[in-house]
Amino acid sequence: MKRFYTSVSVESTEGGWDVRLDGKVIRSPAKAPLVFASRALARGVAAEWEAQGDQVQPNAMPLMQLSSTAVDVVGKQREGIITAVAKYAETDLLCYRAEHPRELIDRQARAWQPLLDWATLRYDAPLHVCTGLMPKPQPADATRALRHAVEALDDWTLSALQSATGACGSLVVALALIEGRIDAAEAFEVSQVDETFQIEQWGEDPEAAKRRAGLREDIVAARRFVDLLRAG
Image 1 (cartoon, rainbow, N blue to C red):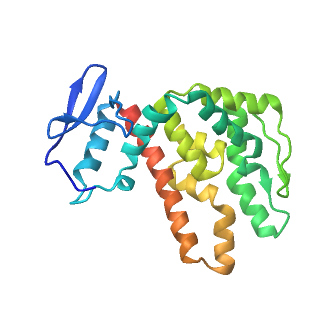
Image 2 (tube, one colour; image 1 turned 135 degrees about the horizontal axis):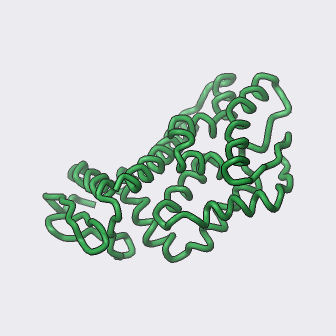
């Protein structure tokens, strides 16, 4: 899409802040008004619009995308999204450990067990660890507690959590990221333990590298989005 505006501004409005292009308020892809409760987030989105060149690249505006998802998707499909995100707890990445080699087993334990221990203390959600890839049932009380944690989030934070959970393949890692227990670099590293180990052994092909870069960007964006949302 060709750039169609010259100026970008952030203005106070009823209920918060909005972003304007040549004085016109931006809307979501579904044409819903975007009112930002946080001025910092509004400025972040405005900076994305300002940074566009002759062609507007939506994929280069992750804060705008997460904001639009909060309004167009999460706000209208909240229960379904909560269910989909909470379901990750049933097969959380951190619970499935390698049977060999020893180096990978130890690396997984060092990276993953502290976060599982954190989830146990933070949410009263002790998840069981197993070896192999076959799904194993998790305690109902634990998965219920993690669902409650997801339900407690507002639509905007849930938008970030949904993106982070998919990028990390783990609800526990995503919650730790959103709550500030770990930063974006740690979340990426923890969620990529297996892949990193394999790359060290066999190398990395261009497609895998591109995919990993995309996941990293999604994780970074989710954390920045929440930081700006909470900055006020």
